[in-house]
Image (cartoon, rainbow, N blue to C red):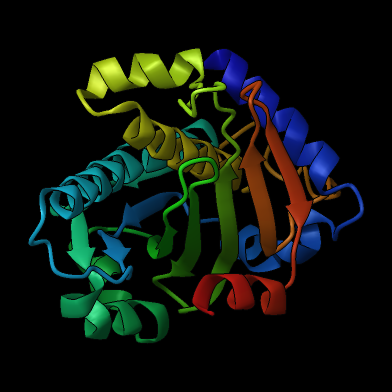
Length: 258
């Protein structure tokens, strides 16, 4: 984990060197200096068809495993930046039944969470699209951090995270050692473990870009460091490294929704 953390920090600096500074991207966050973050349940907006056959059921079991792993790894990056994390009572809200609640969290007054959870901000994460491809599984994720006091966006990021997978001459996937280990630990197949590792790296990458809290020694010392783009692509290659490239809203939406 420490090696992964150091790799992600170095990638943050390299991938965003041509972008805006943190003092610009996170101006509202520096101003409000939140300490406590409530993590809302993950919103799964991916379309799920009939699960009549066993293959489809296995696919949905994988999605649920990934969603649970998603929420379990979100607090790690926040905690490393000094934030006090308040987890949600529930883990997953399917998009079909929670579209109204998601819209309220993204646009409405959040003072309720300030009172109930004593939270300064709410982290809202949506799994937008899940694309099946044996050698290049891809997930599209939206991260939004909103203030419970002002309702302002303190962070809003869209990520396309994918994994390029080599195969043997027989067409068998060649997983990373970390993916095999994760498969054994979570008791899921290797392809599902690949997606779990994808969301873990996406979570850490996005959270590690946030400024440190005001109680940290490093607060405001990162004002002029480069920030990541609001839209970016992240790909885990066959060596396990995360390759990050900037994207645009148009590119993201065309790939995600079309």
